[in-house]
Each structure stands twice: as C-alpha cells, then as structure tokens.
Length: 360
Image (tube, helix red, strand yellow):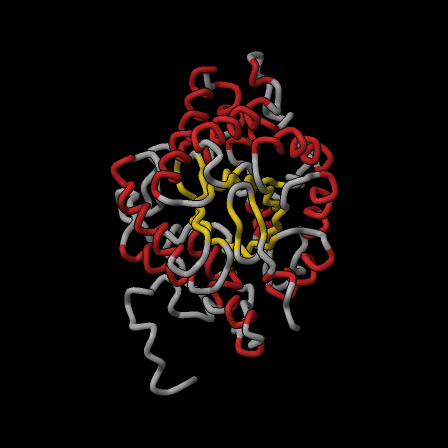
C-alpha cells in the first residue's frame, strides 16, 4: 500500500511533526536503579527514533521521586543533563522528543483512598509535581509532554464518579483535570506541546463511559494540544487485552472511539491500540483521526516507518502481537524483549550496524 496520509506534517500546538506516527510510550525497565537515564535506556530510545516516526514518547516517567525499579523520574532537577542527552538523541533523527508523565506513588493505588483520603493541599501538590516535571522536560529540550490521564491513572481517578466523593472543589470531577492541564500549560509557557492520554471508556460496570469522557474532553480541550485515545484500566488484568490486543483480537479497535472525539474537538486526535502502518494510513486518510501511536509495530522493526516512506513495505518485519514485550515489562518488571527482534532491549550488547554473517 502506497502511503501518503501518514507522511503529511501535523501541527500540534507550537510544534510541527514531520509525519503522523508516534512511538507510543512504554516502560522498557532500562533506566538506572536511581531512575536516571542509563546508557542502555539511551541506546534503546535512539533505536526507536531511527524508525522514522514523527514523535518518540518516553514512557512511564514519574513526576514524583518514583518507585525506582529502573523507570525514569522528572522529579530530580539534577538529572537534567541525562534528560537533555536523550532529548537530543531523539531529535538527531528528526523526531520530536516527548515524555509521558505519571504520578507513580498513586499510579496503582486504591483509587477510593487516593481520591477521598488525600487532603486539598496534597492534591494541589500532586498538580504542582506535574507542572514542575513539565518545566524540567521543557528545559531539558523536550518538544512535548504527554499527561497520562487514562488507564486508571490519577487524573482518571478524580474524574470517576464511582470514586470521587470529595466535598472540596475537587469534588467537581472536571476540576482536577482542568487545574492539572492549566498548571502544565503555565509552567511551560506555551513553548512545548501538551498531549493528553485518555481512556475513552473504562468498560467495567459503573465506571466512566464514552459519553462522559467526550464531555470531559471538551472541558480540557482549551488547555491541551492533542488528545490521545485509548481504553481500559491497567490495574484490571482482565482489561489488559483491551489495552494491548493480542493476536486473537482485532487490530485498531480504538479507531471508532477516537473518531467520536475527532468529530467534536478542534485539536488533533491521536489513537493507540494495536495499530500498524496500514491501519494508520487508512484511518488518517478517512479523517477518523489525525495521528496514530504504536510501540509493538516499532519494536518488531525499528526501521518500519522509514521503510514505508520509501515504499519498501515488503521489507517490514511484522509484529505478531505475542505480547512478549508487555508481559515482561508490565507483568514481571523485567527489561523489554521482542520475540521477532532480538536487538530490542539489547542495543548495547551488539554492533547493530553489522549484518549477520548468515541470514536466518
């Protein structure tokens, strides 16, 4: 399939992306034990940037000091030189550098306690953590930040009617998200783009519905530059196949949901969820979305976007959606691996520019 739609530039807030493909955020568990950028993390990220994608988003980065466990943090200003190196490494390949922000202390905590047992001052400090982290990312040279407001993360906890029984101003389910996005905008002075990841629906009974999320998106739209549409909850194992669809489920299941947001918003809409380059081309060509995010497709062939640009689709090694990558990282907290690309997570082990003596 000759691809043209995905290679159109896209303006997102103050930046312009060279194409419509984002390397979606994922935690490779390659950071140092002190949550700083390691050589392994640097080489892994640059390898993803070589794909030719328009933006590379570093995944699961804490705005608080973080749990360690080889994930990054934006809470330590002393790490700015490491972060600057990785932002520069991404941009070396013409991609915009982005970083996903989460509050790891509360990330997988009991949402009823997080929402209702934190004081007003503690909630304000959570928001301030995001703002400080975004400012640090900007000063390190990142072009964009991604606020993770979906998959049961803190912003979605406060928006959820099942959990939010507060009596202060954060009892307004929209208030946390509004103040969070405004704080990030003010801290970065409009100099970098703000992407917001959302779960279009949380699927389980009594949880947030598509209709509610559509209304919420309109409320936060003035304070963000792009909406990133997913579905489901991370803490519910039964929903993991929704977030990372395996081979026995259809690809691109979130496209119809993202289209709903595209119809009501005036900012670009990005979609994630078992996407590949063919699906991305079709969805963008139809006008269902403006952009597509993917990580497993990039893992399988870290040159795939550039190959597609050159019309070499037959040379692209496909992802088989076995979920070796997500099973190791999300479920076992091990370093990332890929069943069809043995170099992923091992970038510092081999000279990747030298072909094998014997092809297999």
